[in-house]
Amino acid sequence: MKKIFLYILAGSLCFSACKKDDEIETYKEPEDITVQNSYDDQAIKKFMSENYLDAQGNIKAFSTTDTSDDNEKKLIDMPYETLPSGTIYIVREGAQPSATDAKTIGPKDILTMMMRANALLAVNTDGNVAFASTLAITNTINGNGLPIVDPMYYYVKQSVLDAATTDAAKQRSYYEVEGFREAMQKFKAFNNLSSGSPYNLQGVIIVPSRAAFARDPHYPYNTQYSLRNYSMVFNFQVYGRADRPDGQ
Image (cartoon, rainbow, N blue to C red; front, side, top):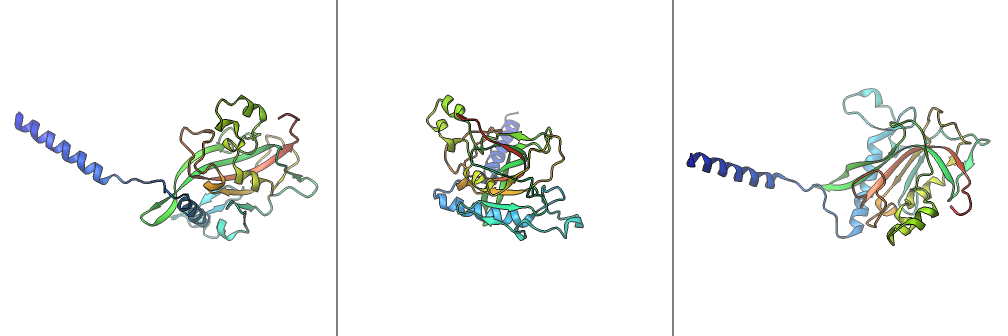
């Protein structure tokens, strides 16, 4: 029995040691934030090369087994603009409100949006830089199908700031995503579509981490995980906008 026990113990120790040797750390935060910024830019271009927009404007990954998407245009081959912050936006052709229906989006507007928003972490794995982790932030398309109204990552109400109990949470940058706010104002809102209207997504906004929360404290939104170093991808339609009441 003693020999059997010793064999089992030895085997367990060997297995434990082998497991530690085989474990690969998938992400280690670069000490120099400019390295992470470089990862973001590389991962964003790779993402744009591997995805396209379907008939309703949803971001879709190209299939490696199905040839039905072979003639779809890559995001990177679509007309896109890059803002000074590094944020990229794509205005989808044929999905914008008409000139008579379009409403200008202001920095304090209350927005009603059909949206899918994800946070993605750019990682360098053996020299291959790509998004390796995805966190869902908002998904009204695959959720209840109803638009989100007044998301805080576009504009946070003054009452929220006033009620904050920490210095970090009293700052707009704790909630608002700079790159998203900047790019959103390049789009036009529809003239208050009904919440049950079929969606036809207007475009894409891709925000590198330096134009999101970078390494600063931030509101957790719908995830239990930190959004530190995460870039963000927004795929959306602006159903309507409204003036914000004074004091908000």
